[in-house]
Amino acid sequence: MAQAGLPTASDSDSDGINDAVEQALLTQFAPTFMISSQECSSLPAQFASGILSPTVQTENGTIYGEVFPVKTSSASEHGAEIHFYHLWKQDCGAHGHPLDAEHVSVLVQASNNDLSSATWRAVYWYAAAHQNTVCDVSQISRASTLGAENHGATVWISAGKHASFLNETLCERGCGGDVCLETTPLFISQIVNLGEPDHPMNGSLWIMSNGWPLAARMNSTDFPATAISRLNSLPATDIAWFNPGKHPMQGTIAISGLTADALANSGHSTASAISVGQDSTGNALKRSYRNTVKALGSATRSIGRAFSSTVGPK
Image (cartoon, rainbow, N blue to C red):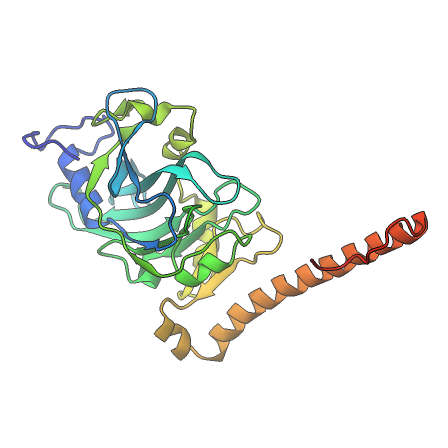
């Protein structure tokens, strides 16, 4: 966390935003993380400071943050991008591995040029889910859609895999490895500012380790103009896939509405948007399965009767 007694003008990571403002932003926009009762890696971990290798000190619900300035559409307005990292001892889902660096981000805007006295408002939220893989179902949303303009968004974390979702329903939409059942809010024990990759703060020398992709995620924006433009072309109630073409089974619009009540009251159009996406995915899978079975059957017949069993579902 920001160290007590630092002068307000201190800028430890040399990014143009002083430490006190960064810590205030991390506190104001800290998400509510919903953790599954089926989580097998306890809680997000705190890592030992001052060493180069990521070493778990304790699993206590520590969240790490990064704040850096960004340009806005208006030269007179100041903005910042905030990354919240939930870092885990291990990915204990399918194809698990030691260390797991996951995050969500928010793009915020200041009300005036005096950042220390400005009021900050969130404009967009991003949640990483299997980022940069074939199963990428990362999402981007307007902050107003989530009701999270002045505070943190609610984010669901899948058990074991630790993918982040801006809506609980989205947890079911990836490649089938995500589970967000019986979730409860994570008690965040502390929020520690990582600084920047070239100016680490609070002893976070381990952010540059090649044991995980943390540094690469810290060095890139989650709000490129193309993603924002595509999102803004959608209805105000929609959450969008960040990479709509990344997974052939996924469409651009992830889901409409936010809560169970919103889904229930949003009418036929919302229900259709959800069911069409699910039906198209299901139909594609069924067609793929039927074609595979047909091909296997033909191959088997051409060889002869070497196989005595029938190809079919197990």
